[in-house]
Length: 620
Image 1 (spheres, rainbow, N blue to C red):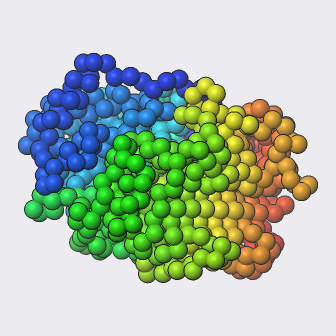
Image 2: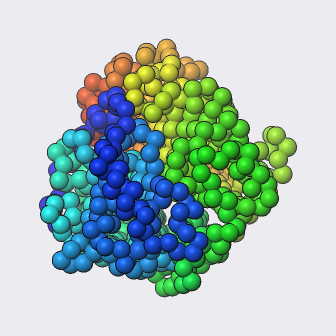
Image 3: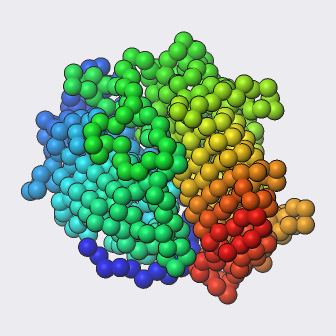
C-alpha cells in the first residue's frame, strides 16, 4: 500500500495540448487481433453477431491467447484519445489467471471490460484491470473506458507497481460498476510522475480491501461497500448510500456523505445465462437505498432475451434502426462511430438502449442524434454523443416537455434513466451544439453524465468560435435526480435547472478556459456565467457536494461573479459548495454562490473556497 500523497495544486496541463491522429496498429498486431478472435468460444447466439470489435473470452481459452489479445487492443488504444476505434472485451463466467500466471488487463481509450456473469462473482480475474495515464500527465485525461460486473483478485505481474493493487486511476467518463475488488484499490496513479487524477465514479461495487483516493481532485462513490475504508481527498469527495464511507466532515475534510441515495437505477448489462444464451439484465429502480444491489443475492430486476433487441452496427442505416424500434425492439449498439443525420427515435415505454464499447453517435447536418418520447421507464446507457460541424439544437432530448404539449408521462417506480451517457462538443473534430442534454421528462435519473465542451483535441477542432456550445445540461422535467453530474467548459450557464423538486448528488465543473475577453463572457451586468443555475421561479431544489473550478488561459484577468446561482427561497437548499482557482495567473471566481462566499483567486490558488449550507439567501 503506498503512503499518503501530499496534496498540491495540479492544473490540468495535459488537457490543453493538441492531439494528432489516432495511433495505428502495425500489421503484426493486427494479425494477433484476428488470430485470437477466431479462437474465442461462441455461446448461443454466437458472439460474432456483435461484430469484430466485441471480443468474447472463455475460461478454456489458452491464457497466452487472451493476454495477447488484450495487449494488442491496449497497444492500439492506450494513446488513441481522439480516434474512432471502439472495443468491448467480454469475459464468460469462470476464472482467468492464477497466482502464478496472472492476467494483466490494461484498459485504454474506448475500451469496455465486462464480466458476463449474472453477478460479479461469476467472473474472477486473478491479476488486475488497470487504467492509468501514459503520457507524463498522470490520469487527468484518462477518459472513455469502463470496467464492470466481475471480481478482481490482485496478483502482481512484472510491472509490480501498477498491479500491486487494483489501480483504476481515471478522470471523467471512466466508470467502475458492479466490481468486487478483494484487495486494495487505488484511484491515484502513484506510479506516474506527476500523479494527478481528476473525477472518478464508482457504483454498486465492493472494494473489500479499502481504497486510496490520493490525488483525485473530485470523486463520487454511490451504493458501494468500501470495506477497509477510504483514505485521502483533495477538494470534493462525495458518498451516498455507501457502507464504510468516511463520515460527513465538509469542509474540514472534503467529505460529503449521505446515508442513502435518494433515487437510483443501476445500469443494464449483458450476461450469459446457465444455458449459454446472451441476455440483458435491467435492474429495478431504488429509492433511499444503501449498499450494493447484489450483496444478498441476485440484483432485483428484469432479464430480457437478446432476441428482444435489434443489434445495431455502424453499417446499419438510421432508418433500419428506427424501423426496429417502431416494431417494439430494444436496441443494443455495438462498438463503433455512427453518423446520425436523422434522430434515432425512442417512442415505446421501457425501451432499453444499451451501448457497448463506448459506441458513439455523431450528429450530421445539425441533427439531434436521439430523441425520447413522453413515455416512462426508458433506459439509455453506455453511449457517447458527439456534436458535428453543423450546429445541433441538442444532442439528446428526453421527452418533449410541458411547453410543447407533451403528456409528460412519468413514474417514480419506473423512472427513465441515463447511465454512463457522455457528450462531447469538439475534440476529434469540429463540433457545435447549443445544448448537449435536454431533459423534459419527469422522474428521470441521470447517473454518471459527462457533458464536455472540449478544451483540447486534434488541431483545428477547439476554439472559442470553433467548438461552440451554450449549455451542457438543461433540466425542464420535475422530480429529476442527478447522481454524478460532470459538466465542463460551456460558454454560457453550464447547467440550467428549470424543473421542480430536482436533486443533485455530486457535481463537477470547470468553467471555460478559452473566453477571449470579459466582453465575450458576461451577461446582464454579471461577469461570466454560472456553473450551475437553478431558475428564478423554482421553489424546491436540493443539491449536495458541488465543485466549480476556473482556469482562463487565454485571458487570465477574467472574472466570474459566482459559480452557483439559485433563487432566494427556503425550499432551495445547497450543501457543501466548493470553488477553486486552478492556476496562479488564470481567472477569478468572485463569490461561491449568489454574491456570497469568498473569492477563488490567484492569491489562494489551489485552496478551496467553500460554503457549507446556502438557503433563503443565507450562506454558512
